[in-house]
Length: 244
Image 1 (tube, rainbow, N blue to C red):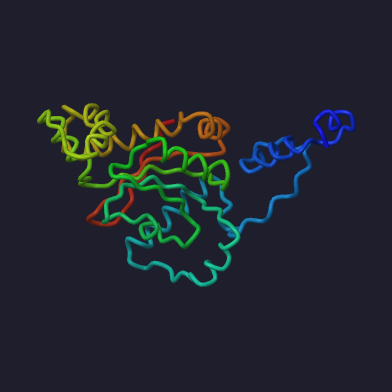
Image 2 (image 1 turned 45 degrees about the vertical axis):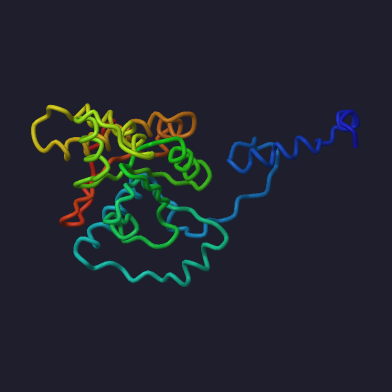
């Protein structure tokens, strides 16, 4: 049927239907379109408020620190997750091999949406991934997780202090971590730990103001963004006080 016939008949055009389907995939279509009801989440227990999600992370970390992690039924979790996912928290973590958020929070498959990059900083790809988990998967808590003795930040500190240019793509890490290194400079205490903590704070603030998706959820109090520090010696995750 031609576009003119569509207009005369009042029937929705093929182009309109394709646009509506595309919007619906990101939860942006108008209710009047009359799309089918959303399927139930594969893990109903993961439908949590930001506060409940943070408590679940903290409880899981306490078990991990004590060495009493739960036995997870990976077989049935795997079956349930073939149809989709609804993680209760999104974690931006360092790529350091000593840090494993799924272990540190004693979580099962489909519980955490984890993005990892050396130095745990926001870039376009990480931001898009976290927007996806909030907008499409319904995640209601985001965490920036730094850790003690971060090698990426230490390398950035040395490069900045020496005025040296690192080989390959390493300068991109230095550029991304430079704001934290400079903000921590001259503060009392351990220089590396200060920079690690400052890096978490900076990236929490970036996430909270990230537009147009995450900032709207944060403003509406539907999503919370928190910072935390993983202690290598104990396994404890220290949750930073709210910066709100």
